[in-house]
Image 1: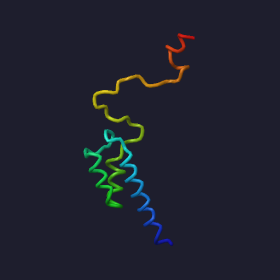
Image 2 (image 1 turned 90 degrees about the horizontal axis):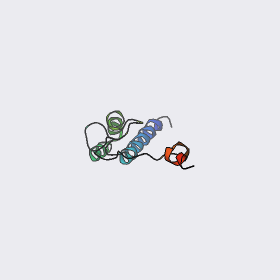
Image 3 (image 1 turned 135 degrees about the vertical axis):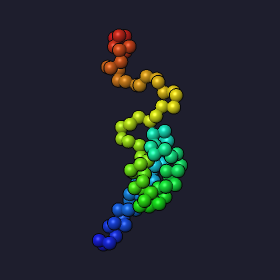
Image 4 (image 1 turned 60 degrees about the vertical axis):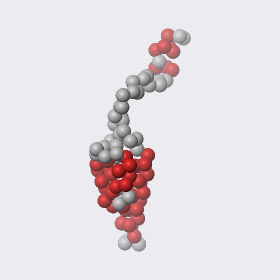
Length: 88
């Protein structure tokens, strides 16, 4: 059983890396490679997963790079919206 534990850990990290790569926003992927290339790299179980987590995975909490648009207003709660409060 002790010999199976590293294999199970590598397979779990590999599966997580592949799903994480597939679900990541293509504009937020780091490393200078397109998302499709990163997905092909993650096909390599141990090395590909390590490369994805170190170099390609988007940083937590970093917004995706804007590609021109997206300067609109964010939705907010009614009690934080000055227009809503003015109408009360």
